Amino acid sequence: MASEDVKTSESAVSTIVNLAGEAKLAREGVKAPSYAILSICKSLAAGGVAGGVSRTAVAPLERLKILLQVQNPHSIKYNGTIQGLKYIWTTEGFRGLFKGNGTNCARIVPNSAVKFFSYEQASKGILYLYQQQTGNEDAQLTPLLRLGAGACAGIIAMSATYPMDMVRGRITVQTESSPYQYRGMFHALSTVLREEGPRALYKGWLPSVIGVIPYVGLNFSVYESLKDWLIKSRPFGLVEDSELSVTTRLACGAAAGTVGQTVAYPLDVIRRRMQMVGWKDAASVVSGDGRNKASLEYTGMIDAFRKTVRHEGFGALYKGLVPNSVKVVPSIAIAFVSYEVVKDILGVEIRISD
Image 1 (cartoon, rainbow, N blue to C red):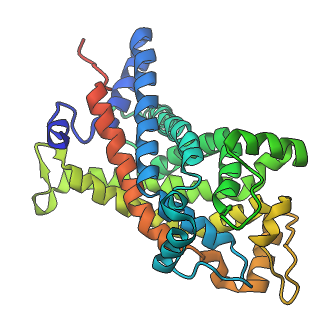
Image 2: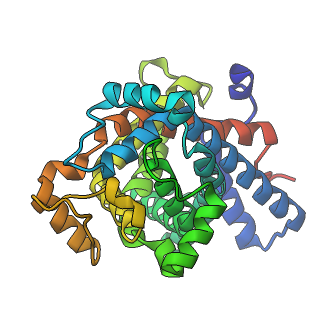
Image 3: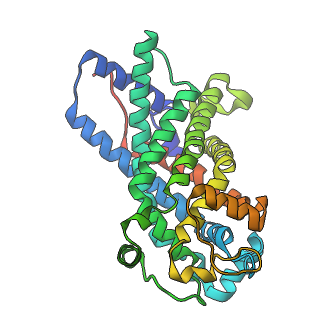
């Protein structure tokens, strides 16, 4: 099935061609409302499927990463990727490996759908403005412009679904031995609103926004730039008839994910810790300022950075990096490939000649 999808009439550079085509139609005043609505729906569906499939595939590593990020430094239960996964399996069973995955999928499907759709729309607008400014109708997006489009898409998608991510983080760190405060996503949302107020749903939002710029921006920029370079240079016979294979797309996605997550990871750790502040049952999860094992309170992002480094060292900003590195490569790669394959199946394209 994958080989049949790859051999469809859409080329690996369809995204850039489509954006240029839409910009041309816009300049000529051509309108196709029925196509536009259908294209939007298909892009949203493709993005949603890509997000759901990729996150489910790496759900155990995602949960372990969050547990390592926020665990009590005075009571280490998870000490490494292999040991951590074995501990979860021993204490919580198979279901424990996927705890919080339902909430994560409920969040990531709309998040990915909005992110991919926003990226295409932002790219289209930026490309149009860039072509207008340069006076070159054949101009293409530069890596810097792609970075900007990716950052815009990430901020929009993250902000739209942040409350779901916040409660997902809390549900994920609950274990068999911890008091169960949340029975599910909706119960968690209502409980946080009732006990902590609406602002609590956006705890950790600022480092998330800052982290989106290098993370999502570099993901899209590196991925698209690698694709263009491979198509133009055709190294090692990786490109046939201007088409990238699924394996090559996976490699591009893996490289993009590795670069993005490495740059932005400390902000992700701070975001998770800030999300735990105010949760009365979080003391058993996040605690420890020296000898005093009371849970830490953060007044803001800078304070969270300062206290984390002071009490646990600079290395604490990279807790969970190993399982995150293991899971982010296949996760990002599968997301990009799934998105493009679903787009090919649905026939998301621009027809300029009609």
